[in-house]
Image 1 (cartoon, rainbow, N blue to C red):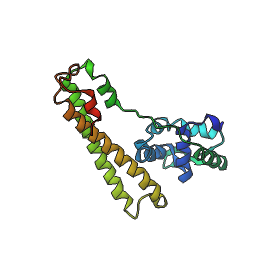
Image 2 (cartoon, helix red, strand yellow):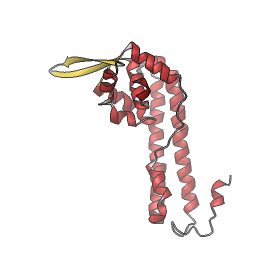
Image 3 (cartoon, rainbow, N blue to C red):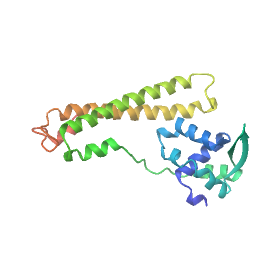
Image 4 (spheres, rainbow, N blue to C red):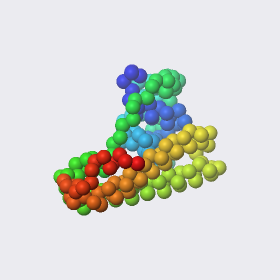
Length: 199
């Protein structure tokens, strides 16, 4: 069964290796952490724990919170072994899912104003996400942050995301300057593609 586990399966196993969670708690923790680099995990969180239980990699226990029932999932020894084995395998090459870039790539089907608006939105979104990340850095410095024993790993991941978001924002602002001299999305005027690669 471990051969059929996806990165999302292993991401959920990774969360379960930290502590036991209800599905709601798993979703919240994924939103807090995995959303930055593996957003797919959150979308599948309501099915994935059940698959892990069926594979013997997790357990599920019914509990009551007041009058409401909830299911709490925990990792098994077999699940920890599967997670460790997966961590020893080479990672797949990174992929990029970027709606704004798809719009830029097909901008010749629209107007120059639309292209500029897309680039502006990319830059603005980058600024917002950078501010969120700065907030996470501040969180890391607090004493009461969850899982303080993982600060070193969180710091590595946060640095990656900061650099990533800075690249998006810097690129979008650079692109806005480039398209200033374009006549339209189908006519860049005297602008030459080689200018994109000049220092």
